[in-house]
Image 1 (cartoon, one colour):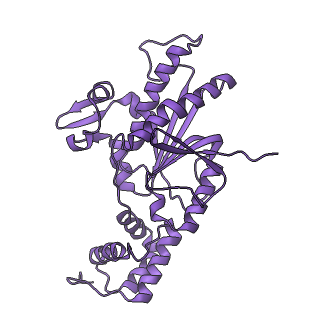
Image 2 (image 1 turned 180 degrees about the vertical axis):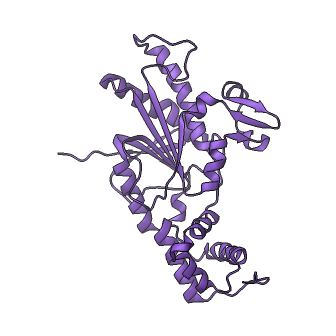
Image 3 (image 1 turned 90 degrees about the vertical axis):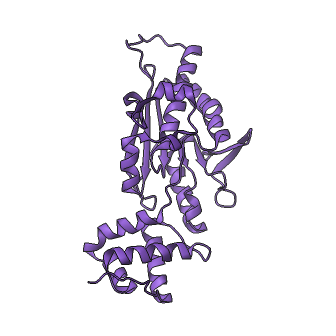
Length: 301
């Protein structure tokens, strides 16, 4: 098939078919404001595949042979915009208030596990930021609340008996590959201050490589938030600037899933421009020094 050199017009029925398919596959909803972005990405994929009509492209996507192309399209529809230490008031609230409360409750119950999920992790800056903040918070907490456990030599990042698991997931395979590499350029490193660079990164030529001991705290996995098979019993979930792609119905379904995926009284952090207001009564909002998060409300009885 010859590669189309000019844009092929997409008809209204073809656009509706493809909009519905994308919505069913991953929950992303392209309304009037964002439909031009969808059309642009569809045109690109049509040229790449050399298919002559959008209906034939739709037929490929819904066929058994079209699984790889469907993954490629969904990847092209996600905007992998992220940075280290993004929205500092929120992260400060996470480190100084939320983590402190979680660690206190867990130490009282002699539960030494901390589980955090970064949903929609993109190229890894968010989960690695969380890893650094948790390491610092645990070290400081341990100084004030020492435990009768022998400290190994050399001193580990996570003081025993604490165990930290950070799960990071995304729908983009290429973003996950970059996240697993954990090397970043000068521009990406701009928000990382000197002390963090010194403690958690090695300079590798023109790039900064995350040190092995911090990198090992984060486990990456492919997840489509549309599915039911999501990680359970998380103390904290970060899902920032993901819900903006969903309509109200899909947002409600996602929040319901997060409620099920959180441990009792767990915390959910969403994007600065996102809110659970009017979508659920199963979380209470906590606001502190310009930072906002939501805590799971436990059902009575």
